[in-house]
Image (cartoon, rainbow, N blue to C red; front, top):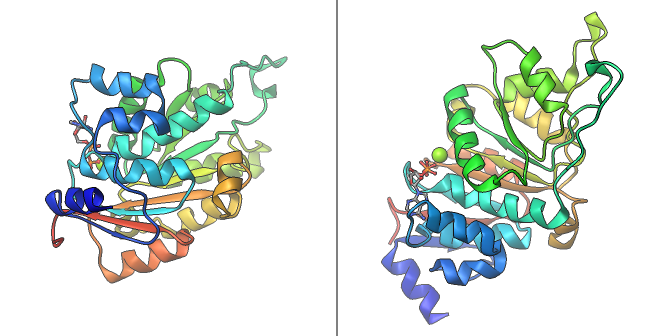
Length: 267
Ligand code: ADP
Ligand code: MG
C-alpha cells in the first residue's frame, strides 16, 4: 500500500474507487496481460508501463469499469488495448473464416471488444497500434466514414474480434439499409469490452446520441465475474479533459467505475 502511494505521488496519479495497486514494471504486469503482450511491449523498445498503463491494466483485467483522465501522449491506447487482447486471447479468437454461398450470405461480424474514437485518423492510428500486439491471433480492424462501405463490409464478415470504429459508420453498419433490404453487418451482442477513446472530443462533435444507441445494444453492465465470462459489459471511458458535461457522460456510460487521473491538476 505504501509503495502504491509512493508511485502515485511520484507520477502524479490520483485514484478514486476500489483501485488495485499500480503495475509499475512490465514484469509485474505479466500476470494480468500474459508473456506475449509484455514481450511485444519490449519489442517496441519500451522500458516500463506509463502511469496510465500501470494503473489502468489491473483495473481493466479485473473487469471493472474505468474512467481515465490523462493528457495526450500518456500512452492511453496500450492502456486499453492490451487488456482487451489478453482477454480475447484467453477465450480464443474467432478463427473461422465463414464461407457463404455468395459473399453477402456470410453472417454479420460479432466482435468481443469495441473501441469508439471520434475521427478516421484516430481509428487508423489505434488499428496500427492494435496490429503491433495482435500478431495475427486477435483479428482487429477499423471502420470509419468518408470511404466506400464495400471493402469494410467484406473484411467485417471475415470474422472480427476487436472492432475500432467511428460512431457514425458503426451505427450505419448496425442498422443495415432497410430501404435496400440490406441486413446489419455488425452485431454487438457479444461485446463485453467497450472503450470510449477521446470521449471528450466525441461529445464535442455531437456523437453522444449515436454512442448511447450503440452502447444500448451491447450487453448491460455487470459484475466483474460476468464481464470476464463475457456475459456483461465493461466500459472504459478515456478523456483528456474533465469538464462537467464529460463527467456527466462518464457517469451515464460506466457503472461503479474506478477513476484514474494522471498529470495536470494532480498532487
Ligand atoms: P495518448 O492516447 O494518451 O495520447 P498514445 O497511446 O497515442 O497516447 O501513446 C503516445 C506514444 O507513446 C505513442 O507513440 C506510443 O507508441 C508510446 N508509448 C505507449 N506506451 C509506451 C510505454 N510504455 N513506454 C514508452 N512509450 C510508450
Ligand atoms: Mg489517444
